[in-house]
Image 1 (tube, rainbow, N blue to C red):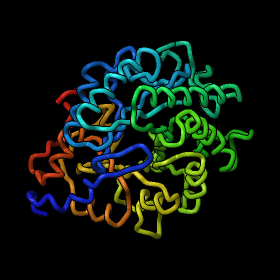
Image 2: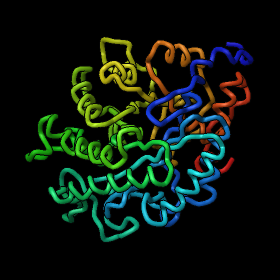
Image 3: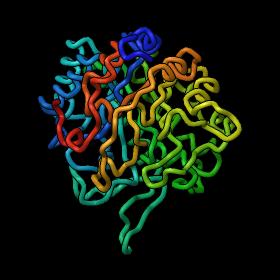
Length: 376
């Protein structure tokens, strides 16, 4: 590709429509935790951070994880809340993104068993998960009762209703990477013996309750995105489905319950989803569900995503590398509908516009400063 031949990128910059959602192109900003919202409230700097990516040409922004109002939803310091004062901060973000011509969806989040006592906003609240976890003889994660499950479902529904009222254009349910919804789906973290554990039908029960409640809260035309993953924060090789058939059995009920778009998270989006076929996880998801799919995973950089990049336990530096021709061919082939960009957008707010215009030589590399700086 000639860097000045922007026509090759055209399939990535076609409009996308679904329900009441219209996007100017197929580029999505992936959700990335920034830990820069003290007290759970997105600041002016956070609003400018998202606004700048909208100005830079991103079609849809999916926010960093923002925790719902259940007492055990949060697991980290300085991440944004999706209730109370946090909603006022998000209102400002939405207004500024819209003014810049962008569209935006919150990623609604409950961390489940990843929480530990001592975490804000209420240090006395333990983690909640499919099973209890003890550390040094102390229960740090509580096995969720039927009442707990109903409370979390209601919390997701309230957050969904608020997302629509605040003015967001869609919402994403975080069902990936070993957080609460995924903890119920993954057999490793869900070994319950009641109606929420064991068979796939049982493990799906809680996620389906959430999707149905959210759909009822937002009505028929407000898009619901569901992010799922094979890999987990604690295990890059983990899977929730070992075959395409198993993946279909998991995702089809979610689609029927109200999911409009699936966000297929994998560490390298171009790799085969399953042995015996070249199809990616996103391509399989699209084929199995008939729903639009967002592909994501190390796009635009030469180093595969690792959580150590964000915890500063390894060097995050990564060169900008984007094969626009390959991405455009995958889009035309129907491997995905939308493509999510993560770390590359932290270092370069204008990534989308530069790719659109064939200005690849001016893309910025990703380095440590991108993790510490919101506004660039």
